[in-house]
Amino acid sequence: MFVHRNAQLPAAELPGIVHKTLAGNNLGACRLSVWRQAIEPGAATPPHRHDCEEVVLVQAGRGRLLVDGRSVEFEADSTVVLPAGCDHQITNDGDEPLVLVAAFSATPVGTFTPGGASIDLPW
Image 1 (cartoon, rainbow, N blue to C red):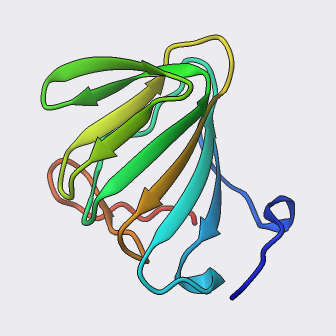
Image 2 (image 1 turned 180 degrees about the vertical axis):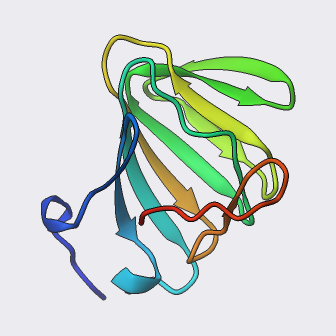
């Protein structure tokens, strides 16, 4: 068992997104990853997919999930479930940071463009 102080874990950034990996292969987990992200108002993840399942717990704010040509709104205290290989994008439609905690059924997490090219994330 490992205990990590989340405030002491390194943060990484993409435009409009602050990311922390809370659990993964470099933090003692061998079969799952947990990420926390804060997405600024008006910002969005790039369109992407993962090679594993993803479950997103919405902690604060509100946003929109773009998936399968549809747009689905969500808010705090919502859960988003995404199967492996599902192209998606999360946008912050609100006026406060959108705070998410995401659990993945793999570590490391493979992340790809909708066309299948690997995305080299800074975490």
